[in-house]
Amino acid sequence: MPWSLRDSLEWGRHLTGRKAANAWRIWSSFRHASRTGDPHIQGLPVTISFEPTTACNLRCPECPSGLRSFTRPTGNLKADLFQRVIGELAPDLWGLTFYFQGEPYINPGFLDMVAHARQQGIYTATSTNAHFLDEEKAEATVRSGLSRLIISLDGTTQDTYSQYRREGHLDQVIAGTERIVKWKRKLRSRTPHVVFQFLVVRPNEHQVPEARQLARRLGVDALWLKTAQIYDPRDDHPLIPTQDKYSRYRRNANGVWEVKNALDDRCWKMWHSCVITWDGRVVPCCFDKDAHHVLGDLRTQTFREVWH
Image 1: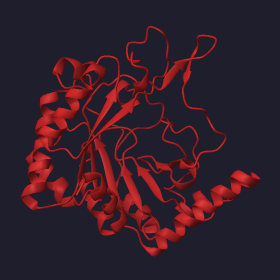
Image 2: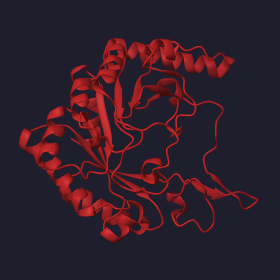
Image 3: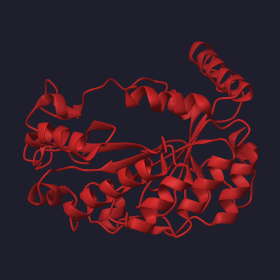
């Protein structure tokens, strides 16, 4: 069975009648708002992102965690806040991503939170740089029931990898991946679905074919190619790929760099999802790295009070 189909089936295992009805209410509200301009929303989020931590061991450019440039408070998500919010949302929540900024495995309680969400019947995913996947963490990751594990690769040689993943070590990424695959086989677990995510930038765009080969060799289930968000796109920017298909940006008629995709006056993702920062602030969009647009604070409010 293709692994993409297995991951889809894993999503399906977490769908209940109540969750499907909630998703239909959200979709209907979105369509109604698109036609009428009425922003009233029915239902609760179908998926959410919860930030385990703002801390990171790497120094990647174009990343607030890597640049240590946050203007908001930094810290680790606490278990009591997490469990209270999940307790409120679990009956309707289909999917949960443990990621916003930072490296999730830095939070010592991260995998306990994954296991808790899994016990509540929620599909779970996270994204990691894989530097903390020693034998103990790899086994615990598989045992936690994590549904999907996204591993940032971004290069197939140390020199190329470190041009974006600064202070990172490719050999640790490969070793951590091998441990996850080994423990999946040892425990006969269908999860997590292991994905290599390759952020395509100018220094590594020539290594995409090699990344595919490496993924197959290690037993990784999928390779995703991701375009890079650049905060100040310009002609001499060292990260914008030379191959147009790998870039989010293009020059307009005036020679100014702009995002390729047209920006609609509506966003489906902000209707069916949201982001919760480590300290309980709810923001509508994952592009709001510094949480400027806060809908509410879950330290003092219930989620329903914030959402509605």
